[in-house]
Length: 352
Image (cartoon, rainbow, N blue to C red):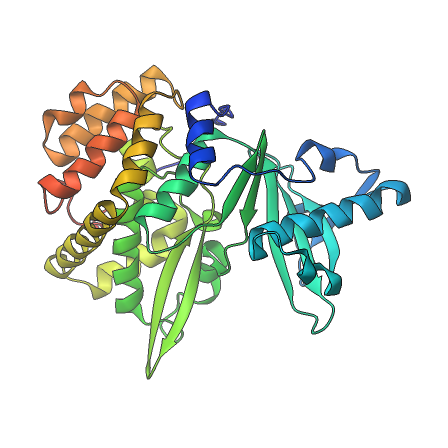
């Protein structure tokens, strides 16, 4: 089983990554920064509807600061959702600002409400971390999901990704009466393959969500990563394969019972083919990102050396051995999509 035992450091945004963000319209002016939100005067623990601790705390600002902060947060929402059109702000109000001290980058979560219909949305303000930005951009380019994020200086703004948290989904939905086991197993195979190719690590219970999509008399599922902190950092290949996290075992167990190895291999090949198509359609932007990442430092030499040899064994391909950093390893991982229809060893996802 895989596990994260040490805290990953926050890597600063390099000059080359900053240029990439500017060139692709990810860096813009914003009226408030991550550090501004730490000027709160008090906080209380936030509990869920069942009275359980959520590991978030709701923060409160002084009367003098609160009006300014709320106005700035509404402007941020307008930038993210309406390209800066502030006309949408008149009927919005900030209901709550929460802080997660448990998270690696201590994110703030803002809940914003439409007072005309009481519908609400969230967005996040975080300390900018190069690892997370690379992960967000790779998810945007290589997965079926589009990611909305913006950067200014050391502040990262992220759109909320809706869905049922993975740990909650496993607890309440992964039972025979509630789940379409074959379709869930199929989606997990695809999700596992995307994480491996993108080198997105630590995708366990609370780091992904599940969307349930009705379609005529069937139900489909889509799994989406929501935490990109462990992008291309760890040296163990198992960290980039959700199959190896014990929190995901109930889904693995469904796969063992409902999917034959040859069917799973088919789904792996199908997903790698889809990723190959996305590589082709985003070639210029992806090449610029990989080049930037190959000139950046987002991990340790020990992790780079370990991962390149483990992936060389996994794919039975010595190309990885020459890699000098995580960006070059990622580049080789993407090249495997074009060179090989599927990895050559450890094919069966549901073999633990």
